Structures are given as C-alpha cells and as structure tokens.
Image (cartoon, rainbow, N blue to C red; front, side, top):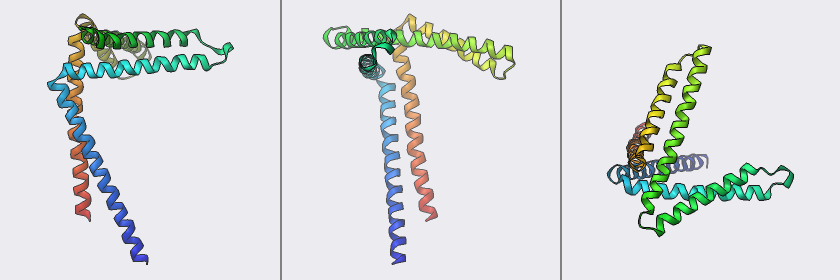
Amino acid sequence: MKKTMILSVEQAAQAARKRILNGGVAVGVLLTGLGVAAVFAPLLLGWSLAVILMAGFVLYGAAQLLAYLETDRQRRSLWTLLTGLALAAFAGFSLWAAFATPYGSAALIAGLGTAVALFTVVQGISQIITFDEMRRNGVPGAGWVLAAGLLNAVAGNLIAMQPVIGWVSISTVWGIYLMVSGVALAAESLSDHRGRSADA
C-alpha cells in the first residue's frame, strides 16, 4: 500500500514536470514566433500592437468613467472624469479612423509613436533630474542615470520627428527581445527536463 502511494506520488510529479516542460516549450515557441513576425513584418505587428493598445486605452478610460460614477458625489475627482473621457474618446476615435478611413492605420501608428516619444522624453527629463539629486547626495551610479536620461531624451526626439518609423523600430526591437526570450525559455525548459531525466 505504501509502495503504491509512493509510486502514485512519483507519477504525479513526473506528470507535473511534463506539463511544465510542454508549457515552457510552447510559450518559448510562441514568443519566438511573435519575435520573428515583429522582425520580418514590423509594420504588421506594429499595427496589431497599436490596435491592442488602443483597445486597452478604451477599456481603461471606460473603467475610469465607471469609477467616477460609482464614487460618492463628495469624493468624486474631476481629474478621473477628464482622464476617462479623454482616453476613451482619443482611443475610440483612433480605432474608428483606423478601420473606417484609408489612411487610418498610419494615423493610428503615428499617434501612438508620438505618445511613446512624449513619454520617452518625459522619462529622460525625470532621469536627468534624478541624476542631479543623486550627484548632490553622493549616491553611486549617478552617471548611469544621466546616460539613460540623455539616451531617452534623444530617442524620444528622434521618434517624434518620424513617429511611424520610430514605432516600426520599436516593434523590431521588441521582436528581437521576444525572439531571444523565447529561445532562452524553450532551451531552459528542455535542459531542465534533461537534467531531471538524468537524475532519475
């Protein structure tokens, strides 16, 4: 009876390991496939990603509006209402234009590219301010923060000058990252499985 119980526990553990292996390899292959698509068809994946992000903005804006309506009148924030309206209206209009007008997809990508550029520049300025505070307080690593801030500021301005090309470039970089991550995950899953098989 005890031996049977031990065998059943070992079988369950082996089945769990096999599921983890299959899941890791499947996710790795999926990430690699997405990465290859992003590298060799950056405009297509960039457009798909833009649509997904805009749909997310619509949902987030709707959630902000719902939160505003469900909050007590005394505690409602006008900022929440304006943010929800602006996000939902901008993203909804962009999605409508992308599917209803001939040049809507280019406008959608250009809009998101401009938004990414603005965020990148703001992030760079924030890092430069952080560098100044770190330098005054003698915190090590301030130089790296300054380098990252300057890089973000330059990259943001380059993307702002050509938002469509910038968005396609970002999609390509993401593609390379996804490819490397997918191959690494699949290889790690397979090597872990082989190591466990050898131990057994």
